[in-house]
Picture (cartoon, rainbow, N blue to C red):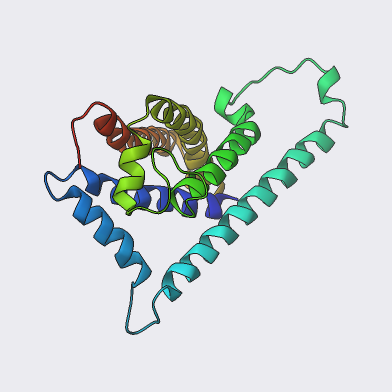
Length: 216
């Protein structure tokens, strides 16, 4: 669960970087579209077009599936450790946080948001502000001109970043990086930095589009 979680965090950071291309003055739309199309031809002609992208998608999907399965197993293991009586016991949390106690529910919210996100921006099954098929930058721009989409996206990203905040810290603890008081502080600081970077990195583009700071 720790390894797959870090893989997914790395993907989030890469995806966030790609989104910020829309903020480049005057040529942001062109840069974003070229970036989107480049991913489809990455390593061409060494590999056929789309092959790398599909291999990447499969690896990402496998990481997500393994992560979810591990989360379910850990949840049931925790339930069994309480003898199935957790709901009748008064629990006192000596350590942990709201994020730690709601990881499974946060994960469900995140999964629902990911499905909606893919249906909207990848398959275009769900369209907001347009009909038919449009260029990648237009999908983003037209969607985030709607205030309710920005609010939805912002709430979803809160769930994502709470998950990342606790998950990043827990993953490195699981992998043995917490070896003393100083490393504990470093891991906590890094988890905050990554979570806040993900949130503001993903939200700056929708807010800029909604407020008219960038236009295409």
